[in-house]
Image 1: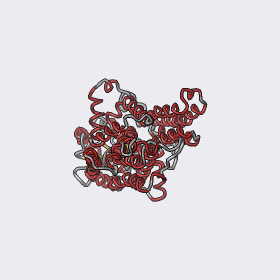
Image 2: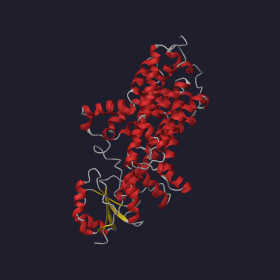
Image 3: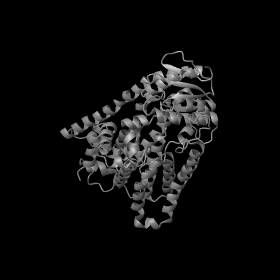
Image 4: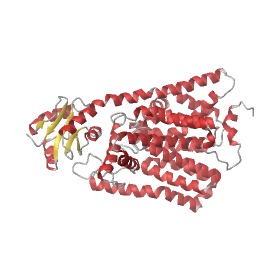
Length: 506
């Protein structure tokens, strides 16, 4: 094979003896700096942003749990939300390690959203480094670095990697689980197998749909052990280590939900997340996921082209089963969690990591120090377009956070009027963002909720104020209902676009 042939670039570092290991340090300073820079720099503009932007509802709930850990006691087993009324707020949720760690930072440095965002960046950077280490066992060091850098630059990855959400921890745990077991399947080193089991347990506990990693995990087990893996005790012990701790957590979380009636809807089959036969039999669902989400929103068109080129360049490779089965598991996940993937764009984030390998292959081939052929020049333009299109999404995400600044100011007004530890009813149609910024506990409300009987029942439970933002989308009917209830109390708001109805003072 000639040195300039694409496969030489792909396989040059695979000629090392069987069992050899390429660690992060051997990637070299340049590739490591590229990985870290792309994992951190595009996310810096979001560090000080308030929780009002993209997916603010999910971030607000996570931040509220962190704050409640901080002020209510650092008990990891009892996450609490703000929309609990007069109750303790314990909620059925995924394993709350991320907000718990943020609460620990609050104890050290004081409560500020910035610590949650910094922690998310740390985990996202760790995921990129693990991905680079995994790719480096199949590609040369620069191709592996480009793959990890491309994953960090993807618009949804860039944003979620600084969001106040547990997804960055989930990514770190899932990529680490695959990386360690891939290494074990090559070297047979037992500590990597058990490290993989521990990371997999964490990934599933933090996000239950990460069960789809069982597909690449089974492939890696079979790659080393063959069919005898089904009769190997260590394989079943691995499964026990990976599955029993999450199962214990979800059983405990379900009991919390039964006790308080509060849940994030983990088990809502056919509605919020799991299943939904109507979607699976609808062509528009697949068009939306493939074109609207993966090609346009996540891969920014140019990334999809690079992915296709990378697949063509490595079409004869027989050793990329880890990544192929990882994507196969991801495809199964898209179908099983059809409703969740249809509604939420960040649900597709886990399957973008293995796709990045082929993007790295295409970029490395385009940027090789070789004769500048027309094809290579086109590849360089495409790689540049990919980076530019990804970075162009940063202002898009920031724009929504800037636009939500008025919500933060209105929350400050509410806090100045409503005494601490006071229960409130917030007209928010189930979105906890405003309630989080008010920093009070209480109830969600919508137009259908605001009947005199319901309000009176809440007042007997301790509700002292009704709070509503004027002009909030979807709140017209709720505002009409509030106007009919003005006789219940005086409006304590100093501004016309905010209602703070005092239920104690007619």
